Length: 209
Length: 280
Image (tube, rainbow over the protein chains, first blue to last red):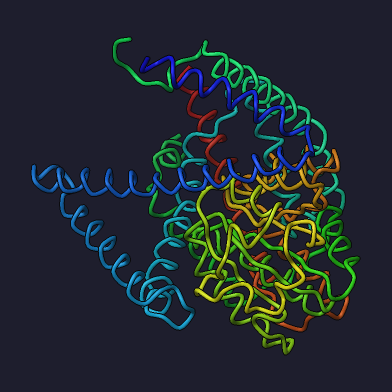
C-alpha cells in the first residue's frame, strides 16, 4: 500500500496535468490553478528542509571539531542574524537587512568570490590549455577568435573578427547546442513517462514493499 | 632551454599581479576602444522600443551580487529605456539573493525620470516555486503576490489595477545568471501564454540561449557585459539616457583580460612544445 497509493496518485495526476494543458474549459483551468497553489505550498517546505539540513550539518561539524569548524560558527551566526533582522525589520529599502547586511556585506563578498575566477582562469589556462592534439588545437583557435571577437579590442585588431566570432557562435556552436537540447528534452520526456507509468520508482525512496 | 623550463614553472602570483594590473588600469584610465551594438542586443532594444507608452514591461531579476557587474547594468539600462518611453516597469525575481539588487534599482532609477513607486514601477519581490509562480502569474498575479516586496497590498498600488495577469504585460525580460531563469520564463510564460520573452545572460551561459533566439522563442538577447554595454550605447544614441555607462567603462578591462589570457596560453604552449621537443 505504501508504494501503490503514491504510484496511483502519480499516474492520475500525471495524466490529468497532461490532459488539462489542452483543455481550456473553466473546470480544467480551476484545477490547474489549484494544483499550482499546491506546488507553491509544497515548494515552501523545501525551505524548512534546507534550513534544518544546514543547521544540523554545521552543528554536527562544530560538535566534532571537524576541519574548518570555525567557518561553521560564521555560517550559523550569519544565518541567525539575517533571519532575526529579516523577520524583525522586513526587507524595506531603508531597513537594516538592506543597509547593514546586503549592500555592505553580501554584495562585496559575493562579487569578490566571482571576481577571483578571473585570476584562477588565467593561471589555469596558462598551465593546462595545451594544443596537444588536432582537436584541442581547433578548440584553442575557436576560443581565441570568440574571445577576441566578443570584446572591442577584437574589432580594433581586425574589423572582420567580430563577424567570424559571430559565425562560430551561430553555426557550429548552435548545431551542437541544439543537439544537446533535443537529447535532454527527449530524455526528460522519457523519464517523465517512466515516472508517471511507475516504471521508474527511485523517487519513492528505499524500504520494503 | 632553461628559460622555457622557467616559463612552465612561473609563479602563479606573477600571473595574478599581471592580471590584476591590466584589469584595474583601464578602469582608472580608459582606453576608449568603443562599443558597437550587435544584432541580438538591437533586437531586444527594438522590441522594447516598439511597446506603446503606458504599457507594462516585466523584468525578472534572477541573479545575485556575483553576477552584478554583468547583469545589473542591463537592469538599469532596460529601466531607463522603459521610463524614457513612458512604460510601466514591473519587477519580480526567482532568486532570493536578487532582492536587494531589484530594490536598489527600483529606488535609484525611477527618480531620474520623475517616476513614482506604485504608479510607474512596482517590485513584487521573491517567491519560491519557480514554475508554479510563473504559471500562477499567468492566471492571476495577485494570487501569487498578494503584497509587494515591502508588504503593501497590490490593490493599493495604482499601477497594478491594470495589470492582473501575464497577458496584461507587453513583454518579459529575464535577467538570468543561471537556473531558475530565462528557460523557465520560456517554458511557462512563452509557451503557455504566448508572452514575448527577451533575456540578458552572463557571457558564460549566453551560448545556451542562441538556439531559442534563432527559433524566435526569444525576442532578444544581451550576452554578458558586452550585451549590457551594447544596450547602454543604444539607449544613449537614441537620446533616452545620459547616465554614466558602467558596462561600457568596464569593456576596456575585459578586452585586456581576454588578451592577457590569450597571451598566457600562447606562451604556455610555446614553452610546452619547446621543452617537449628537447626532451624527446
